[in-house]
Image (cartoon, rainbow, N blue to C red):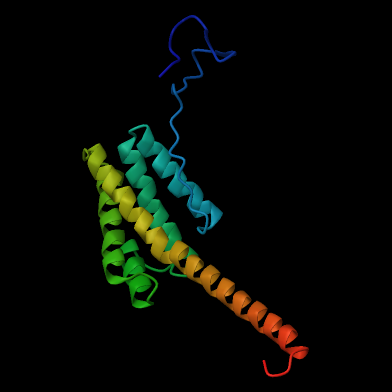
Length: 174
C-alpha cells in the first residue's frame, strides 16, 4: 500500500497525498454476473475484488450478504437466513446441493461477522466465494441462459416456418 510517507508520491502522473492511501497495483477480479440484478452483482463483484487483494474476511462477509440479498430478490424475505435458504430450496429455486452451498456461505459469513475474530485463510475464502457463485448461477444465471436459449429456438422455429411458407407459396408440391 502506498500512502503514509511524509513526501507526496507521484504515480502515473497523479500526486498521492499521505491522507489518500491507495493499493498498488490496484487489484480487480474482473468478475461479472450479467444475469444477476445490478445491486446484487455489485456485492458479488466487490466480494471478488476483496478476495483479489486478500481481504478474505471482507470477501466472506460480502458473500453472505449476496446470499441474503438474493433470497430477498426472489421474494423470500421472512425469517433467518437459514429459513430463507431452506425456503428457496422448498420453492425449487435452489437445487439440494446448491442449498447446502448457500448454507456453507452462511456459516463462513457467520464466522467472520459475529465478532469472534475467527481467522479464515485465503483458500477457505476462495471456496466460499466459489459456492456463492454457484448460488448466483442457480438463482439467476442458469434460468436466464435457459430463457435465452428457448427464445432463440422459438425465433428460429418461427423464422423457419415463415421461410418455408414463403418458399412453398410459389412451388407446388413442397
